[in-house]
Image (cartoon, rainbow, N blue to C red):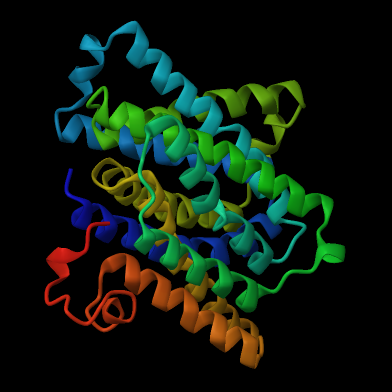
Length: 309
């Protein structure tokens, strides 16, 4: 594994996520959230299928063991279907910043699960960075217990599903040495099949015939962002520890907030400005940036190589 490479790919994923969460808020407002989710994810599954053929990786499926097939199926159900349905249904009825905040608590749950199931060690540097990130989240978005709605709870449940999925995917990528693109395809393919069954059971399949050109455009845009997200993410997850990779995803939070300021005229308070700074500092610490590291290590440390994440 190359953790530096993994962190960079996780950072790219976070940037994509920051734009995606902001845009998806408008996308789900234009159509049924379940139909939008299934259409978007199905398009991504087709895109990854094409990528597997072009990269000559599709033939690998023939050699998979029963255990590998079960892992891919579990990733599709646990990560590629149920949480998507919950998340995009709730996203239509809750502010984008609430969804962004709850989604980015993913690193907390993944760190706990990775420590227990993957035996990942949590360093002092990681704890310091996690403290900065968590404090930044609280200041940037605030904590309003009374304002925590049923739809926010659905998003949190979706995040817990994704946390479990990340542990399953990490095991599939490293222990079973599956390709990141194979894992991404399985996540979208099996997840889309499960969601299509849900639509059929709830009599929503008929809504596909009513999709307008505007809704199709939003679906294509959402699919493009989701495709990039997964392409970058599973490479990052393979190379870096799950706890570190999911922490770096928080770089998307300031991006979502900044887009809200620029395009929705959302004012920025003093606390939000401090929160933005703390999140950037936490991400920089995870990267091992030389202008942040000296504040967390003794002066005699002369090289970033002395930092062991």
